[in-house]
Image (cartoon, rainbow, N blue to C red; front, side, top):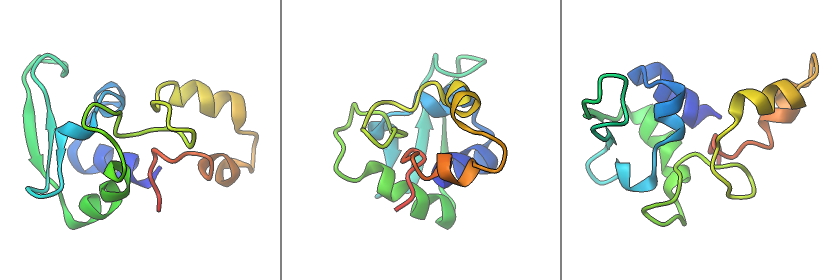
Length: 109
């Protein structure tokens, strides 16, 4: 979850933009992440330079995935869609760390 949150906080990407990211939109070599035209609120694309923290947190999200795969995925490899409903359905008071441990999009290595 830290990778997901690091991108959100550092770059202000919306939840839909984050969940729509694919591996091909992240360049570890150039240390950039790219939102494609038509996928943002104003339909304009943008490219951001990763901070060192974001780079370290996204590297595991890219590992062993194909270019068209979702960047943020669940533990079983399925796309990280439904984050909000998953939290609401699965987290009881005091159990957030148990839920977070099942989220690999959340890409913690």
